[in-house]
Length: 269
Image 1 (cartoon, rainbow, N blue to C red):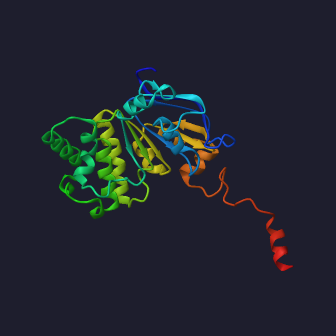
Image 2: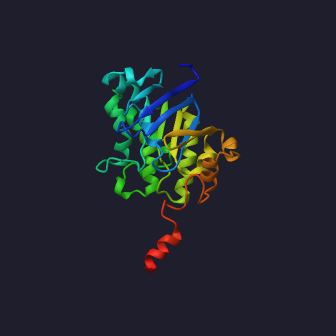
Image 3: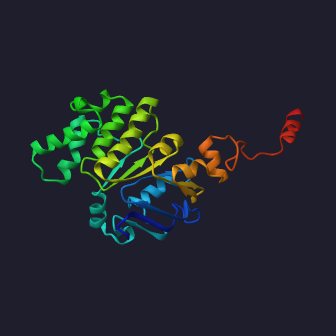
């Protein structure tokens, strides 16, 4: 894999049911140091592609090369070693509810390193300061707002300075202020830590403002790709509908049904 690319997904097919593939001949390249979005409507295969990159699923056909290794050739130990070089922000944060904010962020350091407690303390404070929540270190998750919980989850995800960050719908359920804070943090932390980020989302405008490149997925295939400027100007029907929020297009407004007058006649009868 060229040193400039941290992920290369090549002609990948995958399906939970062999008769119904979720991904069909998908190829994606993620350059080192960039923030790249994978976008599309619900159920199009975005999160499945993220799981392929994280090694949760192996391609049925094709290959995924992540952090220099083919995921299909890794044993369990190799897979775990690869994942230790990644961070993951889950859709709703997934904090440990019986641990304080401090202990949530310290968890990976305690599990995967032999650092002394005083160094772990300083690193936890550093990560919480980066997301603006150093003062909330002793709070429990139940005492946090949704936006605060997502920021704590982000601090935990970057605790070990990962080379690759995966974000699964990081903006879901957030108010506009928290939405903007998380979006800014995704970009800022990526650049400050020198990491690479993959953002799976259907929130168009925020993604267009923070990413370097986008892939649009529809029906399990990449239908468009480009920079934010190229995507905004795209005439690809699905992208145009999605970016501009048009109610009708390749994704129809009306669910398939018989002719309208036929249904009316049936009711009159």
